[in-house]
Length: 524
Image 1 (cartoon, rainbow, N blue to C red):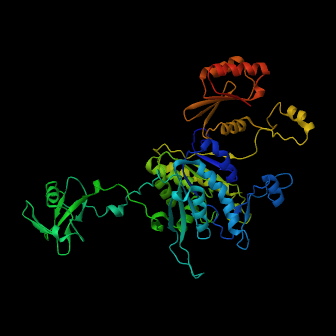
Image 2: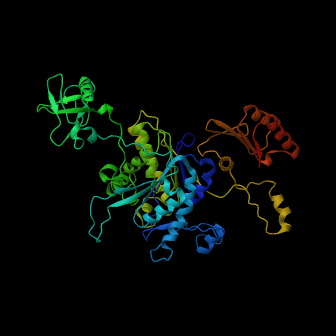
Image 3: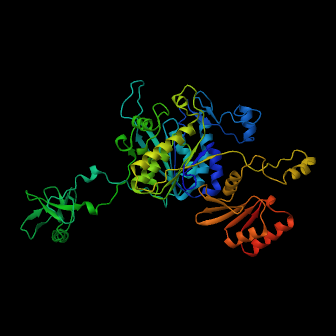
C-alpha cells in the first residue's frame, strides 16, 4: 500500500536474517523495540538456529530443508521434557537481542513481553546483552480480570521486561494526566487562574518551636491544629494571601490553592499496569476479531498496551521495530497513536510466513500464513483510522519485502582447475533470473541506505534519495555523456556494475572523472 511514499516497512523473513540485513542501514536509528517472542510454555515453536556448521547444511541435517535446499520449517516445538528446554530458548533469543542492541539509538529502549516460564532467564540474558546497569523496569501487566478454577494458581499477569541502551541518557516519558486525576480540580470562586484544589498548609511532622499564630488582612486568625505544624513561614503565607492563592473555608480553615495549570502535565509511570488502563486479554481478542474475524489469531496484544509502551518510550518522529510481529498490533498502535497526537512515527515489522494449520479458522478464512494475517490487519486498521480522521495526513501504508538469496552469483571454488570457469561465469556477476529492482534494493542495503529511500529511474540511472541525499546506481551500459550528467548532479555516491562499461579503458576513464570531481564512486 502506498509503496512509493510510505515510510513503514513489513519484512517477511526469519527475523534473525532480517536483523542481520538491517544492521548497516539502521544501526543506531531505532528508538524503540517491542517484541512478543514465544513464551516457551512447552507448547511453543521456537526458531532453531545453529552456528557450528553452515545454516543450510544444518537445516538439511535436521529436516528443516530438503536435499535441494528448499526451506521446510524454521521453527521447532520446544517441549518441557527436552533436556535443553531453557537453553534452546535462550540460544534462540541471544543473537537476536545482540543484533537488536546494535539497532537502538543511544537513548533507545527495548520492551519484551514474557511470562513466568522464562522471565528469570530473560532478565539475566538481557543483563548480559544490554548491561545490568541499563535495566529500567519489570512492568507487570494485569492482563486478566477473571480467575480460572482449572488449577491451584490462576495467573493474571504477564511481565514486560524493559532495558535501555544507556541509562545515563534515557528517561521514560510521563504518562498523560487522566480525567480522573483532574476531576478534583474545580474553580469554586471563579479564580482567574482557573481550576484548583485545596492543599493543606499544615504538616503531620515538624517542630513545636515553629508553631505560630497569624492574622490575615481579612481578619481571620490561623494556627496549626494540635499535633500538626505549619508548612510555610509567616512571610510565605502572607505572600500567598496577597497572590490570592489561599482559600478560606466556612469553618475557619485555610488551604493553599494548587492550580491545575501549574501542576506537571504528566504523571510518573508505575510498574503495575492494570487492565482498566491498558486492556486485558479478552478485550484484545475482541479488538482483533472486530478487524479480521473471530478465531483467526489467539491472544494478540492490544493497542491500548502498545500505545502505553510507545508513548512512554518514543517521540512523534521515532522509528518503532517489532521483529516478532505476530498479528501486527504494534503497527496498528503506531498508526492509531499518530492519529491521536498528530505524530509521524514509522514502523518496521518482521514476521516469518509461518504456515497456518489447515484445520484452523485462519486457514479457512484464506490466510495461508501468519504474515498474511498481519498484513491484512494493518490494511484494515489503517483504512479504519483514515476513515475516522479524514482531515489528517496519515501514513497508513507499508512496503512489503520478502527476504531471498542474493541477486549476485556466489563465488565458490571446489577445484583449482575451476578458477577459469568461475571467472568466465563472473563476467556477468548477476544471476540469470535477477530483477533490476531487486538488485537496486540489495545494493541500497549494502550502501547503508534505508528501505524507505525513494527510487526513480531516469535516463538509464536509478536515482535514490535518502535523508536528503541523492545516490546513483547504474546497472546497464551508459554513454560518456550520461556519466557526465551524473557527475553534474553530484550524488553522494555512485555505484556501477562492471558490465555497464564497454571495456576496461572506459571504466578507468570514468573512475578518474569521478575522482577529479571529488565524488564517491564504486564499481561492482
